Amino acid sequence: MLSRISDIFESPVRYVMVSFTDLHGVLRAKLVPKSHLNSVLETGAGFAGFAIGSVGQGPHDPDLTVRPDLSHWIPLNDAPDIAWTIGNLLLDGQPWHFCTRSLLQKVTEELRQQGIQAKVGIEAEFYLVKETENGHIIPADTYDRAAKTCYQLDVLARHLPFLTDAIDGLESLGIDVYQVDHEDGPSQFEINWVYDDALVTADRFSFLRFWVKRVAQREGLIATFMPKPFSHLTGSGAHVHLSLWDTHTGRNLFDDPTDPSGLSMMAHHFIAGVLSHAAALTAFVAPTVNSYKRLSSPTSLSGATWSPTTITVGANNRTHLIRIPGPGRFEFRAMDSSVNPYLGLAALLVAGFDGIRRRLPNIEPSKENMYGLSSTEIVDRHISRLPGSLDRALDALEADPLFSDAFGDAFIKGFLAYKRSEWDEYHQTVSPQEIQHYLFQ
Ligand code: ADP
Ligand code: MG
Ligand code: MG
Ligand code: MG
Ligand code: MG
Image (cartoon, rainbow, N blue to C red; front, side, top):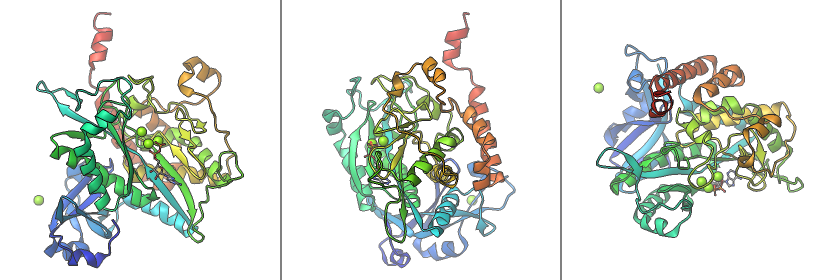
């Protein structure tokens, strides 16, 4: 994925997709013939902000522009004359304060100045679906019906053409895939690739969502990263694994072999920071109405949702918000596949660093099965829950000043206003569940 700028001019690439990520993590792009790439590098490709529903942009406002970052360009392996690039959004030539890629870059740059690099892995879960003749969306593989379908070999084998195409493409683009599995839901899969710098991983996750959808389409399928496409089936998460590294010595600052969890004090402070801001953080990492159908679901056909409901830390235990899978890193399980990865990771880093700054005390990792606790037990033990809906997460965000300080007041106000209107729009629809529940009451 990392190539020198000059290489693109010497390569067989003829067209460049000049992309950016909008506030919601959706990639948008213009196609630029290589003969015009120089002018786009100088002045940027223009986009009407209002057309993409950008916060604070009216139809009368000047264009947002994108200059591609040509240290990261990717020739598509199924169309080598097309390259994918990504850049930051500018307004009047200045970094635009709603550009989430710039936000993550700013946060990671501040860390780099302190000699720290954040390294991140994201697990990408998604469903393959298809549309029936009467317009219903169902899991694509109609033979995949077992309740405990996870890792089933015959299902994996039926999807080899799709899976190997997807992996080949990702690998040829420099994304080092090490495992793919059939996940907990029918026609649900997960792709794992090797962790890297936070910004590089965010770029790769953005690209991966585009790529997986493209390959699925070639097979006549639809790939969806919606967090909870089916009420009774496991949702699609995007767990984050995180560690901090010393840029001078190359040492993992989260590693401490003398600690029972294999974590340094810095890691413990960081985790405590994430917990202390978890409710507000949820608005960024689980940013859609649908995200909370994944997070609040009591169970699923397989017997577990694999998503967290409580603001707690587990040992190597998948029923908590934070899991410690091994020494030197932690896993954060609230994030889902609808995330804007730049914003989600920037918020996670800001929350964790606040814990380091405040030297928040170590929280003992629990071995308890949180799925086994009743609501009453959770209340009796004073265990905090994650917000159960988008509007509650937005209230928590509004009440937590950390993110306004880090991202700016205008960003948080704009984000809240946009997301509240998304919630209101959802809330104004009468659902079939309400008809069933109240119509004959
Ligand atoms: P699990 O399903 O057990 O949660 P996966 O193997 O699916 O784990 O994903 C683990 C992710 O963690 C991968 O992206 C991997 O590269 C990443 N990872 C491993 N070690 C570290 C580390 N020290 N820092 C950040 N990410 C890491
Ligand atoms: Mg036009
Ligand atoms: Mg995994
Ligand atoms: Mg998984
Ligand atoms: Mg995981």
